[in-house]
Every structure is written in structure tokens, then in C-alpha cells.
Length: 86
Image (cartoon, rainbow, N blue to C red; front, side, top):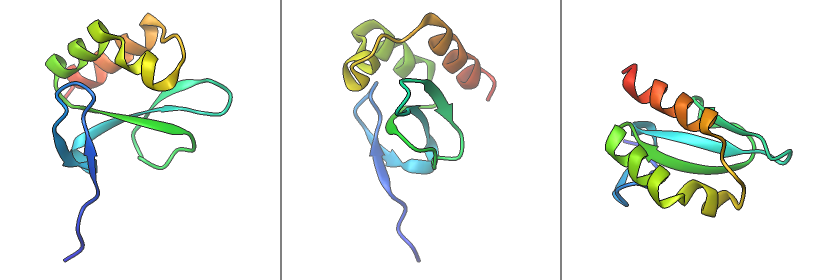
């Protein structure tokens, strides 16, 4: 049986299987996007599929610190939509 890669959620700091988390990517053109495939080029960050974790990330501005880039409200709204649509 193949072992699943583990990643850490930026909201709750829990390690989980990569497939259980949402990947957010910053590419080399400083574009931030939600990576549903988990294979897009660029710097990736992971968050649980939980609105509480997203709120923690927004409040602490952790995504901005990780990517060293200002995150627009539109990205956060897209993430909210992905989490709430489950």
C-alpha cells in the first residue's frame, strides 16, 4: 500500500493527507489561485476544508506571510465558496 503524502494545514497546524486539503498556489507571475489538481507549478500552501481554518488564516494574514504577497479579498471569497460548496 502506497503511503499518502502529508501536509500541514495553515489554520489548525494539523498534519493531514494531501488529498484532504485545499492547495493554494502562487506562480512565478505572482498570481494566486486555488489548485484543485495539486500539481500546478508554483509555491503551494495548504488549508483544511473547514471554514474555521480559513478564518484563522485570514485573521492572522498567514497566507500573505507565506507567499510574501498581498492577498486580495477575491481570493479569500473564492476559498470561502470552495469550502462552503462541499
